[in-house]
Image (cartoon, rainbow, N blue to C red; front, top):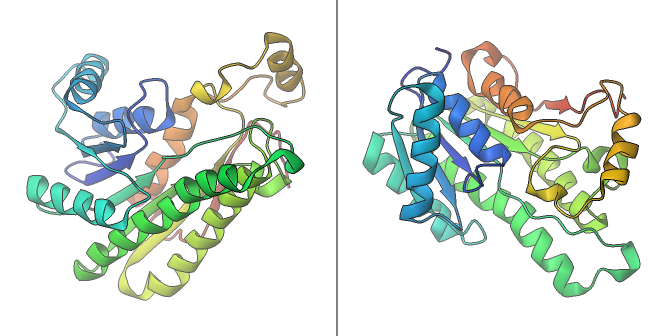
Length: 256
């Protein structure tokens, strides 16, 4: 088990179809004590996540659910306090929380821009700041931020320019944390998935989906578990000498 007894917070974990849930499930399989967080988290959602993970890993997961608005730093700090109260410490933060809007550049309003950037970039900043406070005090810790291939190629297949810009900011934020807090034992890395079969693809036509898939060297879209596997690697000691890196999980759709 790669994460035996490690305490890991995973944000954006409310949807059973999402990358956050897939990461929480894989981490639990590998022995982690998992804190799942989301703005939509409530008792029913936690119960559904617990039931699903227990069934998939064939044993009870050591799981704690917390509602968190990542746009609020106070909420992010309270998330860590709740995790510490339950498990005694936090070893790793995986930030999968994000929103996407598919809009042409000239159609993006100030309200649209603020919404996407506040969640994707300000939220990542708030979570990372709360994490680094805890990790510096405990002389070590690990941050994994899920960004997007949109940040690398200039726009996404689903998200607009505001989405790409927010995810580009997440990559730069991650590198800055790695450089500044590496001497204090804090690692920070980013993952850039491409088109992944989550709720973000809802509304895409089958024709458009197949058109995109036909241009991917591996000839398929990503699965949430594919991205979760990269999160597992970066959260584990297998990546102990990796920080400030951006890991591509894109099926070869953006080779650079």
